[in-house]
Length: 551
Image 1 (cartoon, helix red, strand yellow):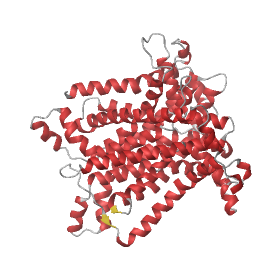
Image 2: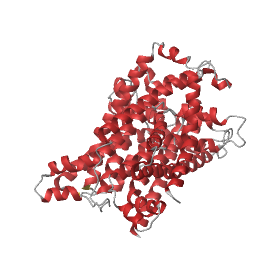
Image 3: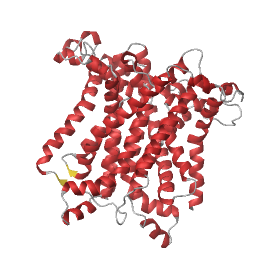
Image 4: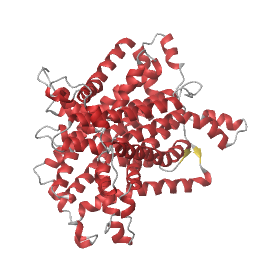
């Protein structure tokens, strides 16, 4: 299998997963009656969009929240990731699992959990008398709640970059008289800059396309964002597909601007190791700093993970929320109800986990190919591949769902995935493809360019060099990205609600319907079961990887 065939196959996959849905969204934005099969009135929707009085407020709210979440995520994730990657800490894999938990928690569930804790008469006030209602329902509160879910993207990008590259160059600098701070500033930090920028970019794009948290907290906080307005255009009658598509184009423009800024800051200043081969990084001894660092990581984990997790678990065992936190109000009836609903809950859990595994495998494979072709092979047209792989990160899930409906709900297709579980898999792959592309791309930029050419000189094909040289070197970053994809896909809500065929339920759809029916306890019980199931699968995956590494 030569490079040209791999390039053609990768392009074909990107066209199916990304280009076609996005092109139909663009057609809907340009031609307002496109959904009715008419290509008339080109660009007539743009004057209407620019005349909307709320547009500046929507743009301002989206940018402020996105930038705020990216900065807070960096403030939390960067030092924790550096500590994880550079130092020998107790129970290192435990910290990784702890910071993966936010990705297993749906954002709207996290927002509701924080509401139950911090609002007036919430759990915090009941137990301590402290009322943080005003902080929660504010722009700062929205940024903090989002950042608590999103900061692990920076943590894993930085820590996996350090674990992959090793610290040989920094140690050489120390041997030649450089202080620890000087070696970090001039050696380690430049090597981390691509990963840090990629993590912050993902945090920014995840924040500007988030719907659940702004919908739950934004109304009472008076914060308007593009995603909530898009949902309003699709939910309120008459449905405004053209307006929703136009606002989606605005989100794409914002995300591409962020991507361009990242490329300008780091794209031409990649730093690689001497040989390109990652070294075994056992971590430096933290000495007297071990206790403060572990305490800081535990504090962040307690606030970002344990507190909302306990709120979710507690809500699942309370008979009624109004009954308060008392032993008399504790019950297992919500869990019993889950297993007595003719298997619907367990079927929804199995469907979500199966789709998440499929999405992780497909996006991991495509992301590896895209990153390799763009970063290592530097093929012609690599800018198009890179841009296509980034664009879905800027699209709200509901708009991707609309694009897939516009694309596949057509009579001219001989075979269509519409109205089947395959449409859900396509939506997850489209939405989550940027994760492996950015994580693997960052890892590849830190590898030297001499190993693969040496393999090619000795007769290896491009595919053999990819399989036996590149994949082993970037496997930590690839596995981290696939775990992220699995975690997010297993709790994806918006496209699941929009695209799930009759008779098919995912976990998020099941939970959402429980909340619509007022069964908050059953919804939280299901969310808790999903979290536990996801953690067990991740532990198994990490155990298998560790065992294969030893062998």
